[in-house]
Image (cartoon, rainbow, N blue to C red; front, side, top):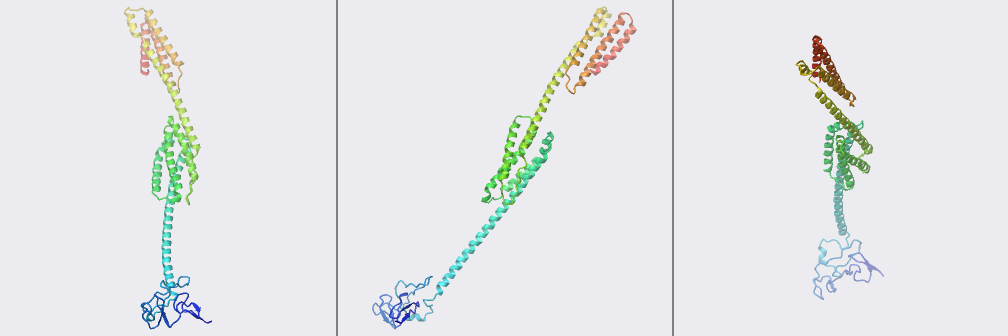
Length: 409
């Protein structure tokens, strides 16, 4: 049996078929089918002879889908309208319309993909720049941290003395200011989300470093007070925490050296404080000894002043007959004995270092006072025997010696 092809969709059909089983159009060229009642009408007819439907109105032809299958219009089978033959319409089985639609869709999709790619590229570039700025700022901050640590190491590498604290007090405030400024600039830099834990670690390290740079001068400035022991304890905790944070800092391209200070620095400062306290304790003991010494010296001087006798006045009284020579000699002997006893006390004093000269000088003056008594006694002896020339000579010698004693006393 011969076959035939549909002139609309090119579907192969049996030779006896009157309508296409794919698109529903009439296969016979000599009739047109009413779209409303399916009545076959002659080709010249303009209206359906069964229902009167206008046969000159074009009907929607089936459009092939993306997989090449043709679907009939909702009205069912569509007859060919001879009037439409004069219209410049593409054949219903032309594959170009879906190709154009697909091309347009691909263009739109391509534009969207390009926009998304551009946005993604811009976002990536911006994220990359943010990360670079943060890492660069972090490098500068860590460099400032290392500079402050180097300064501390240089100042504390030598044996610690009182001059160490003075030197730190001169150079450290500038370093503290520089570190704080670097930390402020770094804090103003946006941190990418992936580096937030490292940002927190670095913030904590800066705070600890600033505390350390405050605690060390405070310890050196006040080594004697008990509160310094608490500061030393906090310093040890801060140094240990700073060392741990340095090991935890892991930023790409940022070199973080190990924390240079250790518990040895705390031990060194603690030893300095203990040394200063021992020195201060010794000073206090020496001060107490000096105070006791000078109190005894003052007592001896006061007794010496009280023991001074008016030997010259006594002579006038003897000459006027108010006293006897025995009374005068007893007075001279008493004055001499008092000065000899005071000299013995001076010589027995525990003399603190640096006061030896004072003790020796007072002992020498007391010896001169004893000599003065002896000379006055010799003059009185000559006078009691009537040898006034010899007595006057001794009295002049005694007066000269007494003037010397009073000038040096």
